[in-house]
Length: 226
Image 1: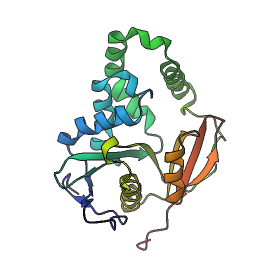
Image 2: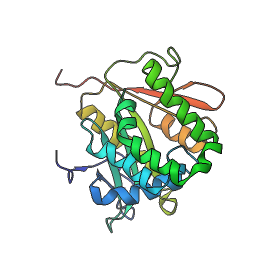
Image 3: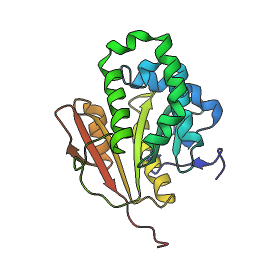
Image 4: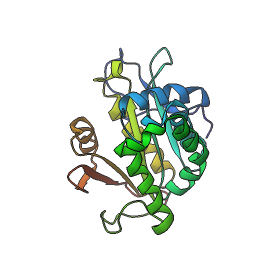
């Protein structure tokens, strides 16, 4: 499927004034998606690494085989939201891809060592190298494979309140189904009430990981082609 293929979200039933369509992300859309990412996830591990790192981070999902990178565009073809994800186990390949970019970001921003998010990210990378995974074994419920991780989602502040997040999540689910994915997963801060409401409205099941983080999963229906 080409980069210009359009994914019509099943949630596209709102007023015609919205004129929002979900499409596959192109190279030209990466910069705007990164800007939305930095705004939506301000203070996150990726956002504090700078614009170049965020662009490389998002673009990896666009070009990676099996990855998902979708954007919501308005009638002017401006990007107003994005969602990215990849099959479970993507972290090692992504970390290798971003290694030199991350090193450069740290050289330019040595004060990052004082940020808890940065130190947590370093610990996660060490766990990945030593144990092959960044989260403790047994911390999450068993779900059918193959599994796709929804890694990040964001909506332009001026476009919020128009159910764009809902459309992006549902389009993500549809694309994952096309790739024969059986289950989806993500994690978010437990105090991010808007995100938690969105995922639960879409049928994702919560499973608290800690006081700070909540893990969500969704089992997709089997393909009728099976």
